[in-house]
Structure formats: C-alpha cells, structure tokens
Length: 419
Image (cartoon, rainbow, N blue to C red):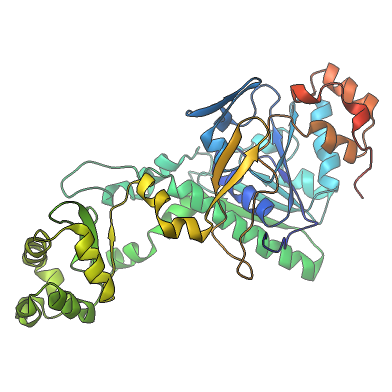
C-alpha cells in the first residue's frame, strides 16, 4: 500500500534538469504532486544521454535520468519559440510550483523568470536552484557538484592522508541541494496557505556545500587549524575507522568510552581499557597511532563475520564494508522497502530507490514510470485547454514534440481543461 499522497492536488511546472532539481521534483511527485517536466524537443534532459543507458526501439535513457524522474509527466516543447513561451505561461496559471535550475539570467531571457511568473500567478511558489546563489561576486558562476566540492574545501579534506584531492562519487552536493529545495518548497506551500501569496525559494550548491561543513568549520574557527585528510577515520573519535580482519575489511565505530570498554572486553584485551593512554576518547585521539595499532593487531586475529557477530551482540557499532551487490542482497535492504520494482513501458522490469521517508509506516511508490520524451505532451496540453487542431499546428511548427507512439492519437485523448 502506498503512503498518503499529501501533495495530491498540487501541480508543479518543472524546468530543471540533470540531478538536483529533478530529484526535488521526483520527491514532490512521490508525495502526490502532479509534476509536469518541461524538456527540450530535440533531446530532452541531458541525463537521458548519460551512460550507462537502457535501450529501446525509440532511443535510450540514461540510468541517472531513470533514477530521478519517476512520478512525472513529460512535455517536450521549444521554450525559445513564442508558442512555447505562451504554453508555459498558460500552464503557470494552473500550477502551484515552478522549479528551475537554469544558468544565471536564462529563465529571464526565456520569459519564465520569477517576475514574469509572479505577474501571471501571484500565488506561485517559484524555486530556483543555482550554483552559487543570487548574492555575491560568484552569483554568475556555473555550478556543478564537483566544482562546488572543490570550491568549498570539501575536496581538501576528502581522501587518504597525504593523498590528492578526491571527489565524493555520489554527487552529494547536487542531491542535498535538491532536498533543501524540497524543504523550502514545502515550507513555502504552508506559508502560502497562511497568506495567500506566493513565495520565492532559492537553493544553491554553494549554500549546500557550506552547510555540509558546519561542524568542521566550527572546529576550524575554534582552533584555526586546517583539518587534514583522515581517510575513513573520524578526527574527533578513536578508534573509528576501517580495519583489516583475518579475511575482509570492516568498519569499527567506537564512539564513546563505554563502547571502548565493551570492545576491550569482547576482544579479550581488558588491559587496554585500563591503559592510561586509552582511558578516554580524548586521550585515544591524542594517541591515535598507538590506539589504531593496538586495535588493528586484535582485529587481524579473527574473520570479519566473527567480529561483526560478537561486536553487534555487545552493542558495538560496526559493519562490513559492503559492495553495492552485497548491500542489495542483504535481508535488511529487501525488507526495508527502499528498493522498489516497477514495470517501464519501454524498458521492462526496473528497480528504483524509494523516497527515504515513511508516512504512517508506508513508503511512497512508483505511480508513474520515468516518462519517455514527450510522452505526455498531448495529454497535458489538452488538459490545459488547447484544442487538437492547435496541438497539430504547434507540432507542425516544431513548437512541441509528441512521443512517436502518440503521434496522431488526438481523438483518443481527453479535452477536459484544468480548472
């Protein structure tokens, strides 16, 4: 059973592309919003072409696209044409939220910037996602996840001691910016419910990257010392790192002194708990090299799974260092419901990662598979009040694009206008 669709009745006009904006819009769709994804007529969202891809008779879609575009409808149109702009303006009168992630000034040049949309619909929630925000000397800079990992200093503290700069590979700045935008939109909808007026929401990769560094910057401001790379270890805790066992690596997370004493007992080394060098976390951090050497020597004496069973039974945080395949095959992953299976009309049986939240014990599900380019163009525009003849004229002038399976199917579509 699907979670409560709390945003049922909310309509979103989504101009965003790639990762941050599409993830935000996907979560809005997961919660019941009707998300209309606006895409260029020739190729659609850039991530449709990112490898690896799924292939079908009409083309291909990248796995990045498929991961962030479920529960949406695709409208393919030429935003640079007068007709395309007019269509967007009509849709804006019928929408609650506009989401865009264009480069600086692009939305304004296309006639779909904040002021233009607010003039059309004063109740609109208008959310912009950018690289550096709208204030400051970098406001015109283009932002990408890796660029902001470098600019913010995140790369300078990521990686093994003595190693070079390392990019975190799952694009955390992009993904978290999408979630911050989601938070802002939900708060703005509540505010609009109180005032009746729309709200402008801004999220940026720069802001997100600094927010990630909150407690690290707090330490830097306190002692003036640049943090060094620590690999998988934790600057403030010890032992808290990946260690080799007799067969496979594991993560041991001794986060306080009580856990340290438990670890020493399970490891059969009560003398370590009494050693003055290791009697508190602060002292273990001071004597990090000696602490790590002592723990590493103990852990090499048994197999990983033996350690995990014994440490877990004692309540000591630890984990295998899983591959993605091992994680996917784990019983907890299966029972959590975080990996969902669905049927795609072009690619068959696929899997997706669910929205990471439950409502009354239930997760949101896939109500719509990620759309094919222009799959819903006709449906959306007929619902917006355009006639079949107008649609055919738009199509003939290349103002809009239908999906190949939809060409010539006007008579089969509803002409009900959205109120």
